[in-house]
Amino acid sequence: MMNNTSSPIVSRRGWLKVASCGVGALTVTGLAPGQASAGLLSPRESHFAPKAKRVIFLFMAGGPSQFESFDHKPALEAGGGKTGLKKGKLLAPLAKFAQHGESGMWVSDAFPHLAKQSDEICMLNAASAPSRAHPIAVPMMHTGAFQFVRPSLGAWVVYGLGTENQDLPGFFTIKPTRTFGGPSNYGCAFLPSTYQATRLGWEGQPIEKATIGNLASHHGLTASAASLSLKLAQMMNQSLLSQSEDVRGVMDSLQLSDRMQSAVPQVLDIASESKETLDAYGIDAGRTDDFGRQCLLARRLVESGVRFVEVSSSGWDHHSNLDKFKNKAEEVDKPIAALLADLRQRGLLEETLVVWTGEFGRTPETQVLNGKETIGRDHNAEGFTAWLAGGGARAGLTHGMTDELGYKAVEGEVVLPDLHATILHLLGLDHTKLVYRYGGRDFRLTNIHGNVVHEIIA
Image 1 (tube, rainbow, N blue to C red):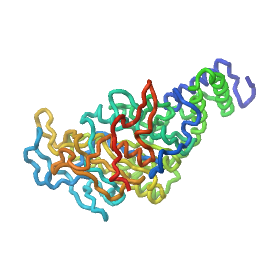
Image 2 (tube, helix red, strand yellow):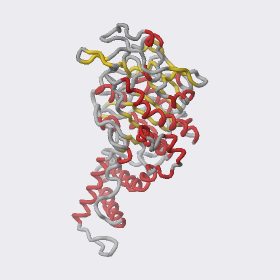
Image 3 (cartoon, rainbow, N blue to C red):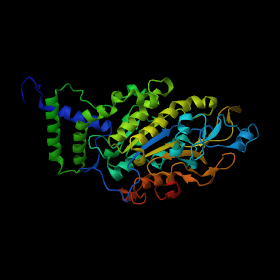
Image 4 (spheres, rainbow, N blue to C red):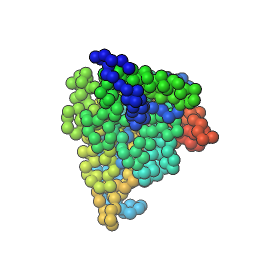
């Protein structure tokens, strides 16, 4: 080995240790594929002309109540206190609704900033999910399945399209939940692990303190020694290529991780943003600060060429304390409205599909806990609200409806495979053709289900 002032003397065993630790660390952070070939993240042609090029998925974990947010129910308001169809009494909405924009879209006063963006939104008031249980509904929202681990929506998108910036991962997840599927919600399952998300933070952790593990070397090597370490690892990997093509993916990932060391910190650094932009997102403004930072990071990531970004907000499981719903809504209202306005101002909204949803919604009745009624609502998967914006979604449209009290969808129902199929369609991907052969059969996100909802496409 070299002996000079810039590179320490390192034994052969030491070099191998550094190299192997590097590969192991990449595996932990989702960068080293278990099976792959060269160019996995290179941009690829879609099946047909896309309306959207990228996705920001805003996941409200817990199941936000549609009755306090986006589904106006005059009959429920009038019937508050009457006997419901199930265990409790009808609970009148704890928010006031009004129509907004040229579309006349109904939005509650819990979302005053989003109400101003109503003409950008395609509201789905008759979404439905396969289960009302968190451990099933959350994985299904993300992967289309729960019995076995399947690739996440983001992984399928990057598998189908690659990504536009080869110095960054194609898929980021910001503050995901550790429960109800945990890492499998942003994983790649049997797809090459190049396609799983790079995680920034965890649920409950302030985003300011969140970091990406193993992004920088912790072995105390100088830059030149680290470069030699990478070259040595790649030489050894090259010698193994004849035995397994899987090694090609590891080689690609090592190169990506090297480039990420400078590219990722730059895109995650919001110091260059103007005070006007920071204020618009509600950064350094108390309740909106954390989610505002997440939304701003999402904009910076997609602007830099990342294909799919998920941003999560937890705490929407209001079995009780529904009277605090407006406080929870305040955390995300201004940041999301700023995100839509910012994307539009930068010319990005037209080709960026923004998706807002929880895993399900809530019932129109009071929650009964231990035989007592509380100011809260139970889970409801038979009819709830989700919305899309940008990326070819039909702006200003309210699609579908539940019955007059909001128990279940009665018109324009959008089941989960339909939602997934439509998202892929907007990206120019035919959900029946986006397949991956594994274990002797072809798999796809929507399994044997799913119909594109053409009515909500512009």
